[in-house]
Image (cartoon, rainbow, N blue to C red):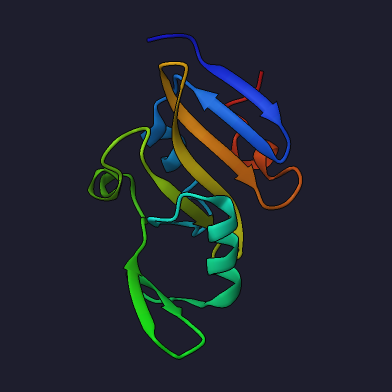
Length: 137
């Protein structure tokens, strides 16, 4: 495997040549959850989150829009669930929520110069350092 490459440009970070499943699994602490969505542009994600109410139920996250339409989307609680929702290392989009459904990270699978990895946007300063302490230079 190629050496790990970390690019830091807060609030954005890239980790290339990593085991993506292991990185995502490391975020499933403190009752965090990961929600995979088919939303690939940051602006669209911001709009989606600001215009909808989000509730965490037993095995799904309920999304309620302004017209009271409801969607139920399964969220990831364990490492074994990743492959069901992430088909390619470079083709996924997810949000990491804390136990109170506060957005911690927006993560995209990427391919950069022929290398697979992830692009991370931290939603608050210094979250990267707290959760990605194994991925420091």
